[in-house]
Length: 314
Image (tube, rainbow, N blue to C red; front, side, top):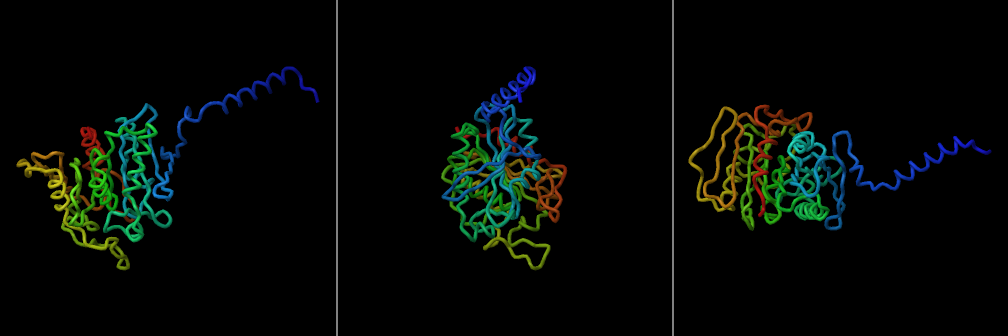
């Protein structure tokens, strides 16, 4: 069948348009994002394929500050994004945020923080190497400023944040563990690392007083193989690692929180105790249907970012 000239012209235009679209580099359109504004990434670390979620504001060009947010035990990267609201803050402030996935069976993932938690701890997963490799990859691809890489996390993710801070002190500009813990006996970091710690005074899962947490089901067993140290131990650890001369005399206290700070430190140390805080991300959303409700009068994500953006490696 012979097509009329008008139809040939239309067909030719369509073919040209399709060819033009195919010729455009994919980078022009930006990474695919799901309905939560996240793009998915993967990286090989130690011979194992590891995955992460990433949110990078459209207006960012070149290397930018990078916030790595580590989800809690039994969570995942998408859960961490929803819980903290960092995506909206990244859009407003101009930084990239990455939510790595821990390891485990299905979507219930954990981090190997040394003495916690469950699968990752039991399998001795090298999560420090994963985070190190992830940082190196994002820096090499021009997506992260090597002098402005920050790590925060909740619960098991906070414990992993402490570990990453001390073992990757030459790559991490600051850390902010939220409702997590140390265990006692950790070696000091090789170099000072600015640390902002957030504790829930009414947390029963990772109690401020230390020990094993309480669980809603009697059948649940502790995810850690040794008891948690008191929350004050985390503050003392970073005071020592950062070579503080002592604690600042002025302790800020409101009806929402108490803030203690180090004095004469080689790197800043701050410790917020949220008076009505439970095992949740303050100012965020519940981590799960059965999870504790977060307080609404303290915005942890904003406080953390305001701390991070004043810190650089050099």
